[in-house]
Image 1 (cartoon, one colour):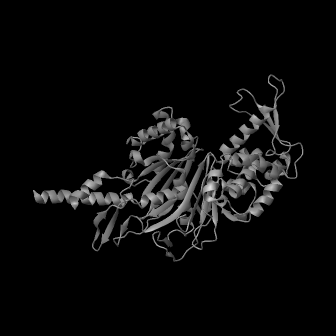
Image 2 (cartoon, chains in turn brown, purple; image 1 turned 90 degrees about the vertical axis):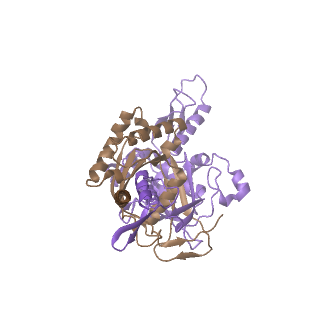
Image 3 (cartoon, helix red, strand yellow; image 1 turned 120 degrees about the horizontal axis):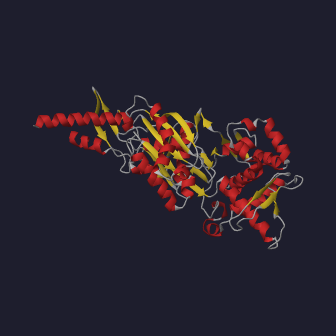
Length: 213
Length: 286
């Protein structure tokens, strides 16, 4: 009996680890902005590390980046309208990840400016429809939970843009800011830059600051 | 203030990050047009058959368009640029747009922090810095800054002095000159449709962005900004930063000699990814 339990546990263990190994390969983001919804597929190295403190994992490539129009808030009259709208992106993501176990690939829906600008009831309605549609496994084969569909704050958008710019400039990871210490270590790489961002509905600014001000 | 953190607190950066909803270039254009319509209607005699019009220095000489405001349903006001370009048309457009950018009173912020620490909408903003040298800064413009840089035909890295000079020249053109000028630069065949769509609003757009950077975000007039749609051949988009954040919230495994994994750890408690089935299996394993 104990042997059987151990065998079962070993089976689950291996399966779970495989899921994790695969999970850390691809991820999908749907960026719902003013103009439309943009699909981006990212990949990264599996998160298997040799030391107990993991290194920072970086997205190594963006394999697909496609946008459909119009703004998602204009196509949410019914779940079938929304399914029709999103199906082009979901199908493209599926075609781009042939051979990958899609249930291990997380899909995020992140709304920005126009959704933030809508009346709360309306934006929450859009969000609930998106959650409903993406939770349907017959429509969306990717890994999804309802909290993976969000309207992000403008400050998050600013910080993500800052991180993206500095990552792509090879400035982010080479620099370590021990924020509880007065010591700052710059090992190599490009200097950090601040960002200013402008969209049809909002503007963002983000930059590193040397101390609590 | 924002702590941007990856892999728990091994790598973290203290950021000032601020967003201003309603201060995008289209929402501000709409505010500008509405304000123009409302101003025009103040001088119209009620019941008059006259078509209301308004001289808008953010429109090029020779251009006119109709605009409406919710305050005056059914009324369309003719907004026109001047008959001939004004020498100081850029400054005149800045003067029109400025009050919209600072519609919110900054006096409380000034009282508390001092003028140099206030940006727009009454918001506090620390002194501009970007890297560890403390006093210097480099900034990168993304999204629609690319559109503005294209309109002003600026190099990827340009100073606000160059920006100002090119914007002055642009706003002092007639509308037909603008069309010819951009046709000669192949703007109408550019895949970015916004370049064509926004053509009549170019002077407004470059004026608003100049004000936003200088009076709003407090960039000095000689600041240098780099703007590009891509870095090292990769498109610049906030989603790259977002996925990086998500990835580093994922569980990870520890490699060991002879087998792929020996243990599984979960990083931060706030992880957005929850694989309950897998975790249950792991609970059985350990």
